[in-house]
Image (cartoon, rainbow, N blue to C red; front, side, top):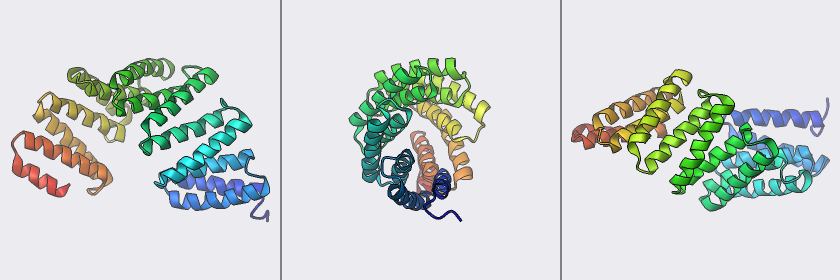
Length: 288
């Protein structure tokens, strides 16, 4: 028997917490992380690498529980400690800086989040190279946030560069390349370039369907984006068919009460309304 404060015991408990988090069981993970953190601070101190790793994971878990202010404070403190102990450009520091950026975005502090994402992307490019997967991930998150902040032209430029870099580094069919192409299509739509957006969305949907399968969440997301572009171009019959396919798949896969299913039913009802099929639209609205 090693004892509850033995390093091997704490490591095993922390791994269990991590596994629970991966399963979406964040409340249970949080309880274990709190226990491990108290033991680590008691036995090796708050700045030990193992303690900092536990503090980072706890900050992440708080965010997944919706406790965003606590998550932000915890992540910010870990980032500062890691920068002081490991250096500003250490991979662990940048992982936590990225968590700070993500939480800022969820708190609605978009400009601060954007600055944080850009800083992570620049630091990773300098330390790891411009085409390293971690660098490209930070650039992707920068591009997505630019679009959400209404800076679609800048987002489009980031996404174009990212598609080229992902294709070069990982191949045209890699899931991350397809994700960058989807973001490119979304930002074309935000700029009102709907013909281009439709063509890009159709291409991404076809490739995701082939690579990931017709029921993969990313495939359905691209099908929905295709339907949005069709609607914007007044091609409502086609949009209706696409939205209905998304609604059917999400109902089957997620259940009728899942928020994504309800959103898809609402999209389908909107198409019916635009086609003058008001009774059918009303029936769908009742379901949604």
